[in-house]
Amino acid sequence: MEVTLRIRRYDPESNRPESYWEEFPVSLEGNATVLDALIKVREEVDGTLSLRCSCRSSICGSCAVRINGQAGLACKMQAADAVDSDGVIVVEPPGVMPVVKDLVVDFKPFWDKIREVEPYLQPQGEEPEGEYLASNESMLHLSGVTSCIMCGACVSDCTVLEVDPTFLGPAALAKAYRFTADPRDGDEEGVSKERLEKLSEVTGMWDCTRCSECVQVCPKGVAPMDRIMALRDQAMEAGLTDNNGSRHATAFTESVAHSGWLDELQLTVKSVGAGNVPALLGFAPVGLRALARGKMPPIIHKSIENVEGIRKLAEKLEDPEPE
Amino acid sequence: MRYAFFPGCVSRGGCPELYPAATMICQRLGIGIQEMPGASCTGAGVLQEKNQPLGDALNARTFAMAEQLGLPILTICSTCQGVMSQANRRLKQSAEYLAEINSHLAEEGLEYRGTTDIKHLLWVLVEDYGLDELTKAITRPLHGVRMAPFYGCYIIRPSDALDFEGHPERQTSLERLIETLGATVVDFSGKTRCCGFPILTTNEKNSMAMVAKHTGDVKDLGADAMVTPCPLCHLNLDGFQPKAAAQAGRKIEMPILHLPQAIGLAMGIRPERLGLKRHIVSVKPLAAKLAGVG
Picture 1 (cartoon, one colour):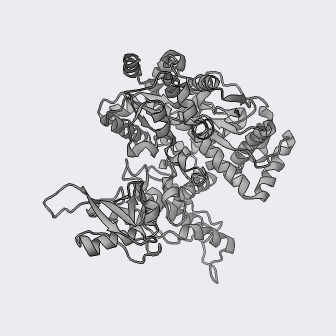
Picture 2: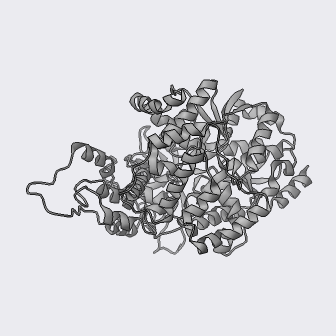
Picture 3: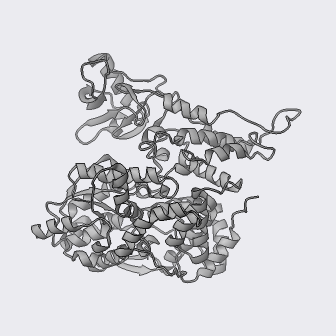
């Protein structure tokens, strides 16, 4: 198989201070991976090409790069699947993190955030006489998160980190969930309220956009965003409801449960808090512009037909109230 | 060709120009749509944060209504598409879960058997109606117009819930539709990223940074307009664009079209009838360009 690797290169020590594209034609076996192709370039064409790799079997998490614009492990992606109709595979370093050289990035921001969530068990209360007990079920549930190999693919493609480097990000938040969902962490009921409180602050769980990029690119099925949504549920259940994210989710649910659909005007007011005059005034210019153009939700919000059925459903499936 | 119509909340709420534009082009193209007046909001992924079983029950209820009509669902919102597809997958994956959800629907005399297909208008046009057929309805091709696609996360990811493997054409459906309208695609990496709308009330600064980045990027690439199949993206990219531009300290003024509006323009429907006057960012430069091409 003849392919052209189009690689984003960068070498701060060369006389080309900016990154640039370089193309390498290579002949590959039919079952070669993108990593095989990169190694072939390094070994046979240009020994200065820098990349990270080790296990070649999707375990070590070293070789995450962007392939055709999307993060993934180079060793997991077959070249035949990555090649476009012109025979080209585009390879770039992962996003968000600073590039050291070619495909190698500095993982310091990644590790800093993992450390920030204190990734170790913190049981409260009295120590048990024997070992801490955890059900099989709870550990099986956690195995989905503990399969994270810290490759950074989710961080690379996170839409929030792209605009805000202070966001904790998908990897660290999923790691935090690994502890908040562990029955041994937190109080005797296994509720990690202090963690959840900290994670409810700005840069934490409520800053995620729910864009699913991390779910899409994770090579190990960790589904970080689903864990972030579970963190939100845990936080609300632990009574941590004094924030816009929680108010938004609650007001949204109430609106649908009451009228069958969304009351957008009420939702905005309830999300920022009806008493939050500065925030509401901040939205005022946008609201006035919309009003002037007739681009407004109905002022009187009518329920949908047969709304009784929905109200009954909501009653039956009601979420337990926070204690 | 007939569908159970699921317009979603925003096309009748914050983007009231979308609903009439969508029904108008469906009527002109001969795509039959039947309303389901008792159908609820999908939960938009927000309700699901708090209570996923309730979200699944609400969506199963809607699917059951479409099943009774014997029709697939047609939606005009990327978010509705994604949330319904994800719910449908959960319901179809486990007979036990489906039975449990159905037990809650029984009181209303509804039962979901797991056979309802859900398709955004974009997919209906590409997969069912056919772009060749659509070409026949294009009387005023948008020649000379440079148009950037903006999908909305939920119609792109997670791709397994949206059956991209069975329908690989979905990955580039919007670009192909833009080409069919006669416009030139302005491709950019932000087309599948997030508009920022979901974090508008939790982190407005980041939300505005996303709006400014995407609209600014296509401005720099010389786009005349951006088109989106997602009214939530429209709310942020259009409604909040002045605020985002102010935050970014630059002039952007990028017109954002709903998908049915772009199609309507290419079918020769007058901009006023498509509700373009309701947009926050003026579409006048685009309309003038089109009039010149006419």
